[in-house]
Figure: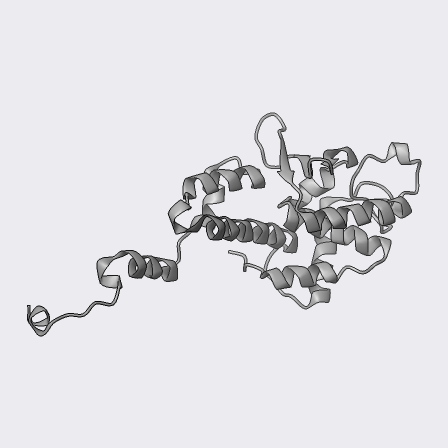
Length: 225
């Protein structure tokens, strides 16, 4: 199980991307992975036309779906919108080396290698760039750093749902379905890992809900019984 990043750590990763065209591109990748919960393959496959700033959404082909390739639409939070706009206006034009009408990809490669500069970035390059941001920020996680951002998106969103609805309005089944749609999981079992209840939460529930969990004053006779 991946360690859950804190919101401060996510901001540190975001800040590790500099003001250069490549840095703004990397910040846009973080915006899509953490702000929208996209997989590396989905970020790579996204086109510019998939971003709808009017409705604050992005529609991408959902990876890991069996059969016909499906697409899902997810909201883009305010800070992620800012990072995407900065990238599209100040960085992406500088990365294009061919006629703009031939480049549909949202995120472009900036390094010379297997993928030429100005062409669609590969998912391997996305993972490499995110890992470099983690190193620059001094944050160490096991496994794929890009998936750690997606994992943080799911966990932080779920905590926000719980906090805003309160104990009385908390409906795990509804929240699980919403999170499934956001993450593009084919099965609810995949989403269920975010609903594992820890011992501390169980203890808090008993102390809050069970009659014996609240402090009571017992008489001497009640203690003897």
